[in-house]
Length: 475
Image (cartoon, rainbow, N blue to C red; front, side):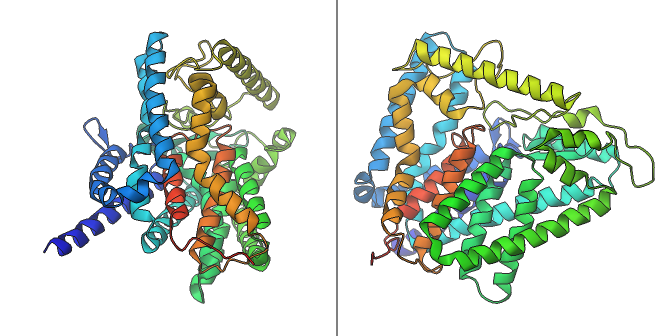
């Protein structure tokens, strides 16, 4: 009876964690469903934490030998010290709590490692993340085409729902195209790399579907119009090619098919809107002067001019979640670029000033750049951590968030001549490692890593690093 109960409890624990992974991938800020003051993500986190305690106890000896666990405990103590320092310096309590709550999911690391360090469980966790990215890509693509025919009042309803549930928002761009910003779009770049792994190990129709899905994910990533996502994708793809060049044929096939599907979708967008405004906006991210060649208001399906809806131009900007650093409705390209550049320069100056005042211990959690910010955070995640935690805390932060990545990177670097089969768990870990590096790069300008979405990736990567079969013999 006890053994049967233990098996059932283990299954419940696994399913709770899988649901948590999926929700973190697709749920934005995690407030799309709430019960009183508790969001669905908070509820899932609490359930997962309690459910994993027995597994943590059973594997306590192995967990206590893991340096990441001790580093996380030490970092947690420093976070409490930094919170006290912030309170002593007069920082707002709401900002202090916002910083603390962003790191709370680290408490799930021991339980996540204990459960997902088993190969079958880890594969299911990776699949949950991949399916979540596919859902985000499909939703982004469907909304893009739907806006070509939807009445403005319906567009307003969608934007209101995204804002009210802290999922994201929309911005009316200069060509009249509605840009859809969903916070979970950060995982599009992750899904593209995971898709290569799943396509490589799949056969028959499933392999074809995985390659086609790559095109949808790439198209959705491009029409997010977020250059940080593109940079992260480019870096992660380059790292994968360097660490495992033996599968270049699969990479080439994935690139060829995804580019073909993306081209078809852009042509379909051209036909839907009557003009290539999606491509114009894409090119405008590299050369803003190209946008000036397109009319400001698009033609509606009935031949009239669509009127911009003011409410759709203000995507929500939550305090604890990544923010889009690009303006949503600038009066002109030149003015927009000038204001954005000035704000970034001012932010960097204030960051350097604050860091210089307390370089060792930092200014404490909840530190705000008064005058230019009103939420206690900035888009420069690493500078924000250095300002608040100081040099000591920043080193601990880097050790916690990059220990598994560093260990795996060193291991794979020594094994570059060895070909890892797609069917081996090590290939899945390598793909996730490259994706994590891409997210870390993106987080330099959008603080994704220091919230539940980024910490969820850290957990599954750390668990993959602890798998017994995550080894490749060197030749």
